[in-house]
Length: 131
Image 1: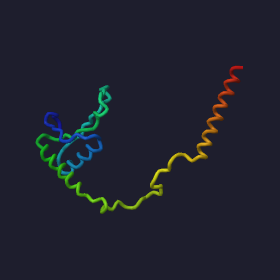
Image 2: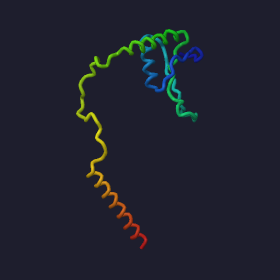
Image 3: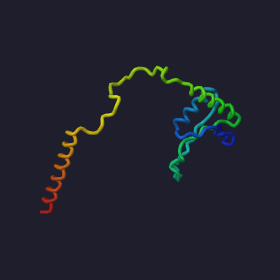
């Protein structure tokens, strides 16, 4: 892919991961493609819109229709996936399935005492320096 005039964007994505995934699908089908980022560069360009991010997937103009058909077919094939039938394996960790809520009360008391001690120490240090 050398001449940018011969390229056509076939997908605009919100994340680079999504664009790279689509590009990998196309490459697996033998279509040459590239991903172009839609973000400010190190040259000092400024993005005025916080939503102007993401990436484009570009292919040669003559491969554009075939690439769109491949991506559409992959999306259509993936919609019928029944996740209840997918074996995702066993968990490898022993972490709790729900997050521990908040800090324990003893930890809160200890943190408050440490903060009070530091503040008292600073006040004493200020008085010593002033005298």
